[in-house]
Amino acid sequence: MYLLDWLSFCLQTPSVTRLALDKPEDYSFHSMFFIFKFLLDQGIESSNANGIITSIAELALELAALNSLLQRRSPLFRHTYTTALIPIFDLFLLCLKYDTSVAVMADRMNYYSESRLRHLVRCLNRHVGLFVREGNKTADSTPLDALPRLVGNVDRLSSAHAGFRRALVEENFLVTVFGLITEFLPSSTLNGVGSPAAKIVSTLLSSRPLTAHEIRHLLPDLLVGHGLLSYVALGLLHHRSTNTQPLSWGSGHGNPLATLYSCCLDRKMSRYMRSALFSIPKNTLAALDYNPDIEAREGWINFVNYNTTCSKAYNMPPLSDGIGLCDNLQHFFTKIPPRTVRGRECARCERMAYCSEGCQREDWEAFHRYECRTSWTSPIDRRCGDISHKSRYSLLELGNLLWLEATQRSPPGGEKDSILRSRQILLADATLFPMQSRFVAFEDLLSLSHGSANVFKDLRSRAIIEELVRDHGLVLVAFLGRIGEFLYATLARYAIMQATECGDGLSPAAEISARSRLVPLNVFVEVLEVPDDMKHHSAV
Image (cartoon, rainbow, N blue to C red; front, side, top):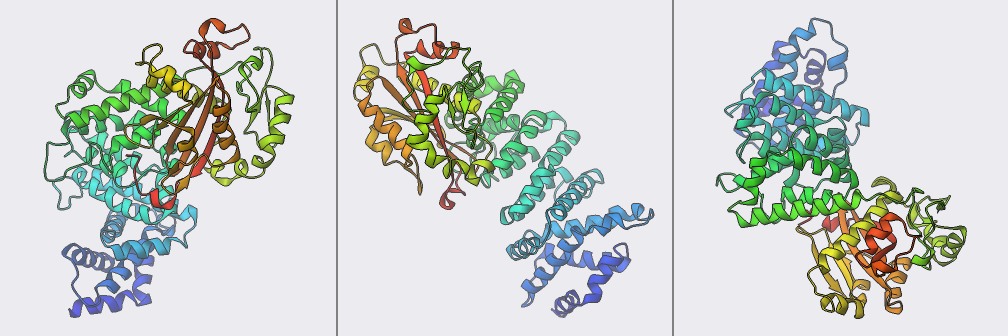
């Protein structure tokens, strides 16, 4: 009790902080740190406990982020680097077990510059390597077994501070961790949910939804270079092998496979996912197809089928002019330009494409005069990445494939023709796992909401939906997808046409679609930020 009170007093004394900052290799400095570590390991029970933890957390964070610790040292410091820095970061990570410490550190980080946060993560990357290579053992049996707990503690702080979370991605913290796992563990020991890799995968993909920035900058290295999808596949085969620390490998909240499922909507991520699928050993793929766990087996099959569908759509080449779209709603398939005609873009926002100046003028008067000044110039679209015309054309092909899958089992003159006569719209919701497709009336689509976000409520979307009622030669596919914190609401328009009616003026891509009686016209993509009430829910 008296020792705790004395420590509380010392931590508020400037001389203690000066000692730690000026002489990190001093013996008394190490003694103080090991006392702090012992107290945190054993749990502090005192009236001053919160104050002590707060003070220790502040000191540990300041030391961990101190630039001069690495830069303003003599060559002799290299010899004492390990003994000086490891206690600091051990204490820093240990403090993250306490909610009070996490809140204090997150608040203090608000005063840190971006470069200082990145420096902190670089030091953390170095500490993790030393932690494993030097064989610094904790209560766990091996250093690698302690990595999941270390990653979990870091994840707690990253969830509380967006800047630190972004720095972890940009400095490849998790890539460093996975590199250590593959370096020090043979592949035969990576199987099962009890392995360090599987536990870290669960922490990465289950504890919270990934942001769009993390998806596009973190997952590619983990998928292609470190076998992230292989760990998920192995987890599906073994997720019931232990009852001590069950992981959510089946369906439900926090499913790692559902997180990867939603990422297939991104063109580049779909390609990385496809490459990762081909790198999984054949015996593992065969075991997944015959997995006795029905829930896990069906989840894997749905994931593979959806990725295959997205890959087919994204591999479809656009028109030769590089645009291949006309966003004028009055444009019809008879006006599709020859391959020698070059398309036009809106010079102001570069988001809309037209086949001619006449179509551009018509759409400007009808809709784009308002869109160009509001929604298309919003910061949301810039933060999530440009929706290029090539990507939009891929979504147009994706809608056609989804229509084929939804109607391919209906016989001629059966359900498909009934759907066309009743003017029903195919609604595919890929924010759910697995994706759910159903036919809805246009009134239901106009009143559709996703959580507290209202979708298809802008003027262009309403005009597209209401046009379906007037024109019986059209098909409409509505698609909802999510990448990180952004929701993609897509409306794809098609003309109904028999294959024998296709003329020479159609592009090869349009002819392929026309064989299924659908000729692609255009697609409208609205990007919305996921509401706060949905940010902590996975796409399940």
